Length: 157
Image (cartoon, rainbow, N blue to C red):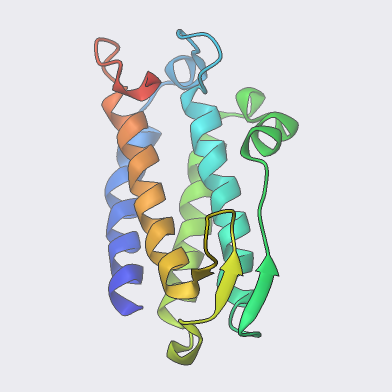
């Protein structure tokens, strides 16, 4: 999983400075109703890091972990990301993902075929969960970073 860890490392490193440059007011804005603000979107990525961290480690213990899901809306709302300082969220997200780069780089290759039910039609392998996690991070970073220009509504879709 060396390539996935390197890809994640490059992704978070390139996004960190751009995220940190977003003003607090812009990060807090919700100009399109119930859609998540940048703070809530980054909070969602922190939640994703937390939940996937558990999967990355636990799936190495057993060949089929069973069900491991979480309610995204509940996690974002219950943690009050909208009222947390933007820079704190950016730093937490970055540091947590720096650790996940290390975790992914040290995954036991023999465990990559281990399974977990994450809510899809079929259980997912650890390898797929890791690959999908990196893709998920990239997806939401593109939403946030393309949304920095208020004329670009891609973030709000």
